[in-house]
Length: 260
Length: 260
Image 1 (cartoon, one colour):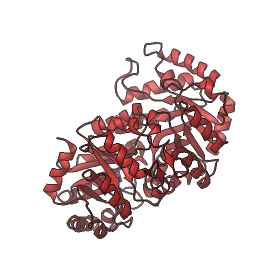
Image 2: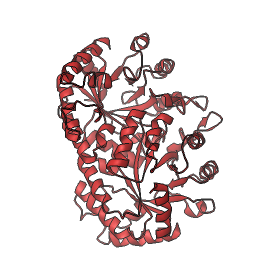
Image 3: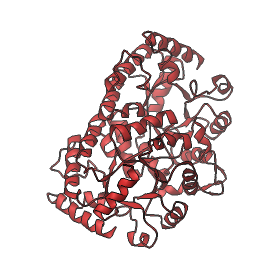
Image 4: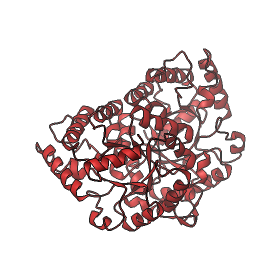
């Protein structure tokens, strides 16, 4: 099955656009877990087990695991076995390199880990992102307009006759099929969000920045959100860091699932 | 010791700007090695052992290892123990994300793996790259102007009153100290290389694209190359894939070391 079809089926099944971001910050996980890769794995598996009837997607953020090197990636391998088969998965890895190297990043994420999708940085241009699209059943989220303040530094500067982020949306839609092409479109920048939807009316948007980063979901909902996945990480994972953390994570996930 | 000092000392000791790129393509390594992470580790260690009295630096390309997930990162951990302490090391990982995430990528590369430097993608702007610079002893190579044809798609488009790559060089030099700031500057784009040197006269350049990618070193040498590291990967690693591969790799490394 193509990843985009899996997205639509999962969304129908779970009835929400909620994507839970697995960002297990080692400094923030409850004290009952050891401060190592095993702790990250155990904490993440509890979060998944307690929310897996709620979330349409899980997004695994590689950085939080890579601080433990090989053991960290082993934790990701373990966690993936806990995600239900019908749930959509995103490797949040922001990879991208010259073509010959990107080919191996794509094989890592799509063959070794078998994720449904990946986040990719398009700065190096078409030939650097093409290898990800050669997996024609998978989905690639290019960084479109990100949720951080640094988006002003380059993405919102003038590029040819438009802004750089607009250029990324337009050019990549010329290069690749909409079925394989999604965009990371931050919730914190409402005007850019609206513009992004004009440029890519039917592409799947991965929307970070709601919750801890300050994006306003009510404001966003006045515009064309779908098709989309709205990611919440810290707002669910660390609502409590005490013994009731799992219960609280489930309660927050249910709230967000209804809201989205 | 600061990484930039280590670079100058290593360069004096080995008398060359040669950086050997450890890009062990699993399809290309000699048949005597198993086609798994163990094979990558063994092949890479042979290459390092046979060239470690020659190369000023080694650049480890994470993609080629990540195809084996946790086992691949284990191979990197093993390989690093074979690199002499005085040799400069580069994690070629092209990382970059929102600040809270970049902090963990930085900790992975600089604390867990203890590399001297990393390649970072600056697309998401200042707050996304700052966490790498908070390791004030280390060195960060931002993608400046890359060696692939896709550099035309975004890096060479007009950005404000200059081109995007020029904007990256100028802004990052305002933000960070030259002691910590290097740039990836491809050998294949001579005019952009010259312009990059004007914008960053004394920053360390990591120069890929010589050899398999077609960059002309004689032409480059007519301009201000230093301080720099010139990377060769395929031209050394895969000169022969027969039983004499190590001997041939050493011979090519010696040739390049003299040339650079």
